[in-house]
Length: 262
Image (cartoon, rainbow, N blue to C red; front, side, top):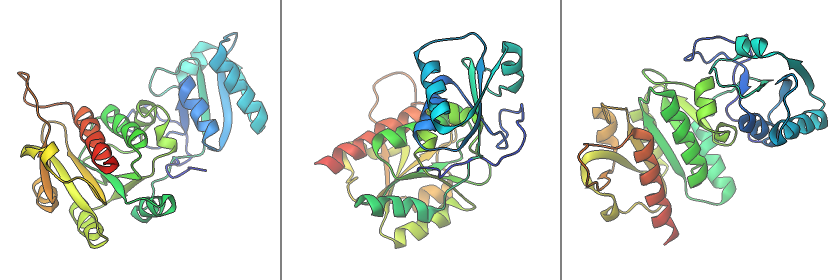
């Protein structure tokens, strides 16, 4: 089972930024939670609604012996945190954060050199969720985020990850720069995204690698940037200065994937 990121089980909170919700919202997200082996306590489905994905959720719930409550839309709206429940919610055990050692062990268990995302002060939950999704698709072994001045594993992050949060360990650390230094001692190299860097194609991004992405608008903090072995940029030709943080993360992640496959 991949249950690195289980939320603390406490009553739901309407605040989007709260980390104390225990609901999964959305049809695909609930299906992924079942299939990943998450512990589901109860499922709420809009009474009278039927389609293929809801039938799959009913089937998975019955197979797992999970109680299904058929409720009206008002009840779903009351429970929903994101406001986009798609007619289904699942009450689940809470997400928990991984340890950095869990991420390294995942790489070891796969027999692969570590590939880690280090996210420096990402405050937009949709961006964080998208980056976790990218981490899963790029085969990264985990994500590291800072404890302060950054979004955590909220319900919105979980939904934006499209279920990837069930598969990608996310570690929260007090000091990103110190965590990077400790990982360097274990053989990792770090490539930070910055418009002042060299072209990504010209950097050697093979081997044990940490991809470092800075906050929206502010970029990399000074101390984190100083810990990077490479500072790289994505070649662009348009009128805008930079890409959205999650888009830049995706482009650079798959450049690392490309180089590792050579």
